[in-house]
Image 1 (cartoon, protein in one colour):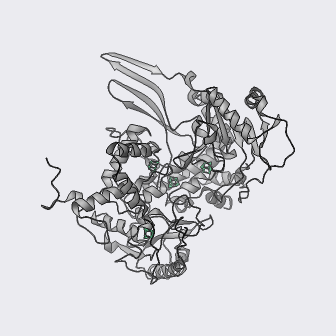
Image 2 (spheres, rainbow over the protein chains, first blue to last red; image 1 turned 180 degrees about the horizontal axis):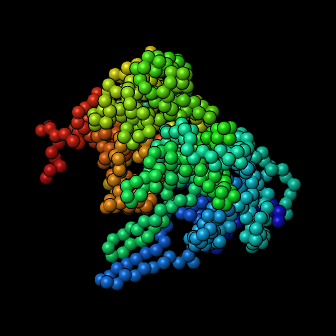
Length: 334
Length: 306
Ligand code: SF4
Ligand code: SF4
Ligand code: SF4
Ligand code: SF4
């Protein structure tokens, strides 16, 4: 279904959804830092900056309770978290590189174990994507088969038009329902042209060739030159729309507490540290190798997809300038 | 008003670094040099370790050379060659950290070949690397730098940086916070700490965070909650501030790398100010045998003993 919506009506739509009690998550400024966060009103939404962290946290929060316990005398009580409590959510203004990562994550969270926390939130969320009008030289969606107008993962997709407003296109029942429920705010498509979209400078990588090299080069001196300088933090994984590792910890006292699920990162030395004291990834290049292997080989082996959408966040934020696009390009030329 | 900051000397500085690096590697005076090299993105730079004189021409110095490379010399970075004498490119602020590490017996002066950089300033975080250096794009630490010309190095290119007087943002912010009530101040820091996602980028780039196992990574016993929630975040930030008091030399790497824009170095600088007032101690270019918090003199302030 194709429609048109003015900026004013988009705002009215968000305010209406908020008034209906839905959680509306969109890019907004938190003390100057752009983040996807629940809006109090439509005026908070910004569309000109890529949020520092990705949209994945609408389904896979930084930290969440997965169980709680209380203990009184000999009586121990365990309580599950009721996924019914997760609110109906509309995720708006999602960049194509963030939206495209969501179906990639679906694959792993509904694989051998169904992660009800992720899947229940996912079921209750409608994704409204937004075409990008600005790219910097860290962006490389076009190198991994996506584009600034890619609709992968979006239920409804907005393209800004010359003269204002957005062209809207639906890609799922969820998208159609959203439009139909608020039909008065949408009008028939007009033939205004889309504004000039972003043009990332990177050429398409030969991902097959990259994978073929990775298949054969688990051990290779290149890993040292690529990642000796990696300092082993969680920045790249935490800002990535596709990284999805987590850790489970119990926090509380003898009397009561919670079991919690936290983001984890393969860059941390502790990630593979065994209880015995042995660490199979004993040096940083081995940890960084896992990042590349997981994104461009293992995930492909298992799910036929690439675990990177070219958002460039890890490039912009790596403390030591490790540039995944440069690395993959280098590998593709080997 | 935006002021342009003159970085014209950086081209000559780059040349001087290259020829010195070439010389000391060819002569076998060092086995490796840690420096900066150009990277893919326009104007960007990244740390590099070179071991051959042929690679000396890869070294550069530009406003994008933000890293404090001292982190590569500590125990935390086992992959960097530790055999023989190592050359390192240092800005004044980085050198203060190196000097601190010598005071803590982590490094020996004679194992290092220090290539000092006459530095007018570098870019703030989140600024596109090809941006020109101005009073708007310069890193906050450079606004109040007293170390444009590093002292006591083995080699420093002869150029002199020209640096305009800029408003001191840390000093102003510390004054603002000091004027608040303790409740207001706590509210401010609580909000800042609540943004932390526990990525530990701040810890991993800090030259002084060289503990083999950080207290915050321990789980037998679990000293600090690992979740990025109020309790664990507050504990982490207090551990960090206290453990760096009297040690942090103000390179502000922690703050530069924080993906959540938490003003981490503000807290460290406030601690440094306290240390200066209480113990007349300041991080500088001279090696101290003992830091202010692990030495005792009769002149030490006793007023807190009641
Ligand atoms: S690996 Fe980097 S560029 Fe790719 S999706 Fe993750 S953060 Fe974005
Ligand atoms: S690649 Fe960069 S962001 Fe990722 S762990 Fe290494 S230093 Fe941290
Ligand atoms: S603080 Fe001083 S020495 Fe350090 S980067 Fe800034 S201007 Fe250069
Ligand atoms: S870099 Fe920032 S977000 Fe990451 S652990 Fe440090 S303070 Fe927290």
